[in-house]
Length: 363
Ligand code: ASP
Image (tube, rainbow, N blue to C red; front, side):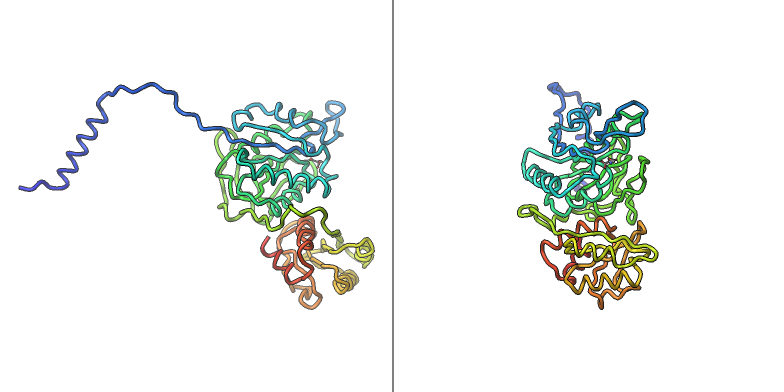
């Protein structure tokens, strides 16, 4: 009688489990430790590095302590990554400028290209953090994590949240799951995509919100990061090259309000603006006088982008303003300050409004 294959399989399982149960002499070896990720902190200043002249005083000076002090204030950081620090600038981010941006982007780009670096953390003031994060997202070409972090309370304040934010930023920068997700921002235990986040409160630690899309992840300290969005949702763009970029064209933001006239638009043109972003009322609207002035600007070759001062929502083409007829671009999801960043970079490539609208759709 031939043996059933099931009997043969059962016998094999019995033999295998008996072998597994038999005590075997094992050489005692410590389990191999995974190598720590190598992360470089590029420090630029901000409240995270701020110091109060007197304890308990509301006033403080941004960008006062060094990158070494930031690391020393966050115990446990050394267990997350092998860390190096560099001071790129020591400024409040209200003073952020093209010189620091280009220096920061060039250095980040160099480090990301190195096989000895696994990720980057950028410490930054919160005022213009969303603009820097978006700028870096547009010019850095790498899958390695780049994580920006700041704080709302200066380093000397009661319950300063900088060390905790820095710890979270380091854990994300060292995490292979953060690769291929574009430039990220950590704040108050949440993680945001550069394109989506916005500062929404003057002083609260809960200030960074991804208004239209929600956060990318929650950073659960000491355990793991829980990702809400797939990598494709925030994939790196790197549309523009930092290599030959020494200057970016001037773009001004014109603020919409009741009874606005064309004065701001004409002042921007007189200052040499190559582009104007309207922080319009509602769905990117403005008074007839302002729209007329913007139309004159567009006819003179200044690229006009309509965004909104509202704080959330999407400004589409041709709703109450005939963009096709007037030659305007719609900012879509970008708030005025981010539309300005993208327009400046777009203008380094083209002045064609159809092409610039396409760039807004893809970035
Ligand atoms: N003014 C500060 C800055 O942006 C605010 C902060 O960092 O929270 O540098």
